[in-house]
Length: 255
Image (cartoon, rainbow, N blue to C red; front, side):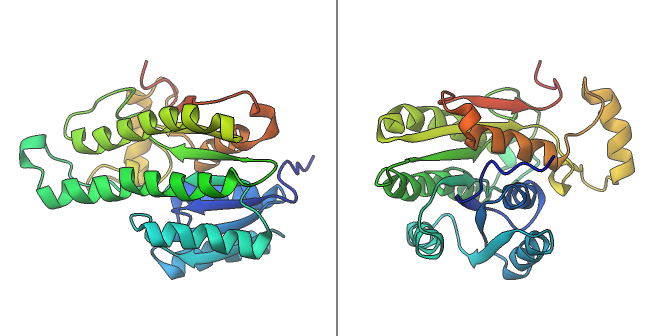
């Protein structure tokens, strides 16, 4: 049976040109939402829009840098101007830098991680909440964190984990700050998923399958569609009393 939980609602997804962000955008569009997909690469955003439209959904693309407050404000304005409101926002844009111990991490890599993974989420939240709290129905925000950080540590990923732990903490604090404004904020923390980010240097997808049978209690990576489904739940009316949670989606890897 086709679901239409988001018919008539507008959704903004950052990092929507590939991977988890694309899966999230397509899942919202499939359930009736009008979706604005944002990112830094026009070509991949256009691909997401084409996939959504091919499936009968509504989507538009806008190039933006989440680390720039002006870009985030413009994204929110575009969503409202085009679709009348901003009902759901998913701050998904993020990068991985490093792959070496803390002592070898360059300052440039560290600042890049902070700018995109942490400041980008903060600026997104600020622009989104400012709009949502003016709307009679408020809105819902879901931030994409990681199981690395607040939930577990892996050698040579410490800087990335630190930024994602900050996203989890920022999400919980913002949830308390703004639930009285009618804005409901939560986060998801995926583990290894079916994206290039979970591949080790030089590793093939087949080799990842073998590795995950040993590393994950579930025995596999999560699909991007599984992560998207968790995001849609948190953004839906079914989660109306879920505030400030950080939903772990990692097949038991953090246990």
